Amino acid sequence: MSTILRTSRLTKRYGGKTVVSDVNMTIIPGDIYGFLGQNGAGKTTTLRMIMGLIHPSSGEVELFGKPLHGNKGEAMERIGAIIEYPGFYLNLNAADNLEIHRRLMGMGNRESIDDALAAVGLLDAKHQKVKQYSLGMKQRLGIARALLHHPELLILDEPTNGLDPVGMKEMRQLFLELVRKRGITFLISSHLLSEIEQLSNKIGIIHKGRMLEEIDYESLQRKTRHYLDIKVTDEKKAAFILEQKLGTTDYVVAGSGGLRLYEHLDEPDRVSLLLAEGGVGIKEMVLSGDSLEEYFLKLTGGDKFA
Amino acid sequence: MLNVLLTEIMKLKNTKMHWLILLGAIPANLVTLYAFLPRVTPEGTRAGIDLQDMFYRQGMVITILGPFMFALMTGYIISREYQERTINQLFSYPVSRTKILFAKLGAVVVLIFTTSLLSCIMVTATGVIMSFTKPVEMEVLWSGIRMNMLAGLLALGTIPVSAALSMIGTSVIPSTVLGAFATIVTLIGEMGHGMRNILFPWAMPYWPVRELAQGLAESGPNPYAVPGMTILAVTFMVSLVFCIVYYEKAEIHSGS
Image 1 (tube, rainbow over the protein chains, first blue to last red):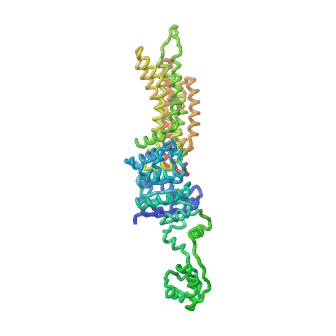
Image 2: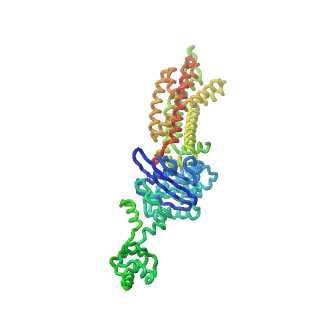
Image 3: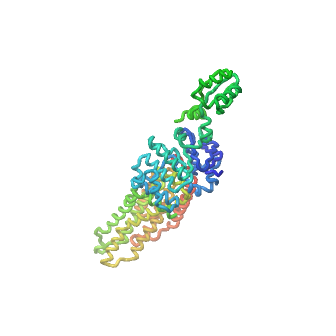
């Protein structure tokens, strides 16, 4: 399958300090890729390398199947981005700022400015100077600018920074709508687990400059499922009873007399009764499993996410 | 390229740049009013208004204020992208950084020539009004216009130096300090009417002004014109190449 973005062992060093180390990332069309990490984990540095704003110390960035180096102009025509902060010419109004963008992107259609502003609900404020905008309005204007030239990939660095909960929800809905209606691929960085969880179908977790895991949402769900952790005297017999008496195959034999049962979590009494009736002794039965947050905490060595 | 230049001009909308242009142009116009003060010839008769003298005084003022004003304009155009954190976006366009740099320098050229043009309005207007009462020497008018054009052109020679300082400092302050220093040095040089001061690149625009005054002061052609031009050309080329390389290679961190 063709890739929109691929990074290979992307590394950035400043002097002796490595701030991003061997980051591999793969994004395919239609992905909403959540790039998750604490503040200072290396997210923005990675995004800057992808956008060609800083030069990697080693490794490669490939956009739309071509190396970024030597093809930057072509790639940038197909990308919309907000890196770190949506910067605007504060003396100009929203329409003028987007007009500058339109010209620099080499677009002919002026009407697209109104369309982009309407998409983020800023059409009524198009003649207002940007210096009068709130941070939330600037974020939305940043999205409008990023959308103006109909990009295939949107790279958004902490896009909900400064937004209130209602604004964050609206932004999420906008992103999902853009995926649905325009088929835009997203790369969204955030330190907010909840934000990434609600949006992404693929998640990359970066910590202290290293990509700890790149995982699709289904695999993550599987990893973070709750289960009944049962220690029994005879695991084979117990497995037979679970299938025959309880009618489930959603379990795994964990070895050393252990079973993990992913169904009937709210019926431990029934499970234990059936096993006991079948002559299987139960040594221990506890509800286990990580929440997403616990999973990330384990992965990152116990440091807290927001 | 024209599109990129137009965006640079657009960015100046609603800024205080027009005040800065007027701040450079108005003093030059005011100084030319000196020509309207009563003046008596050695023969004791009343002298008329001397357009050449007006152009000379206007040229003096604009070449003294120019280094400061033009450095400030350049510094603002370059450094605001860092200050307003628009540099991330600017360098993410499918336009080469060199092209962006040339568009910015192009905007400075427009501002310099606008300032120069406005600075000689009073002289030109006086010439036009005088032409209704007596013939005006077209050669004097043309030499005044030529002086302004050449002075403006020579002022461009040091613009990349200001641009380089603004890029490195990501602020308007370094280029403004340089401009203030250059203005003081130029002022001292012009007050002394020395020929040699045009060896200072920022004072080179004074060369055509002084040439214009030859009829007034009988000073003869400036022997330092060629070495002065050479120094200015080297300054221009070296600083421009530095700007291009620096702009192309610069890494953009935290919007500034």
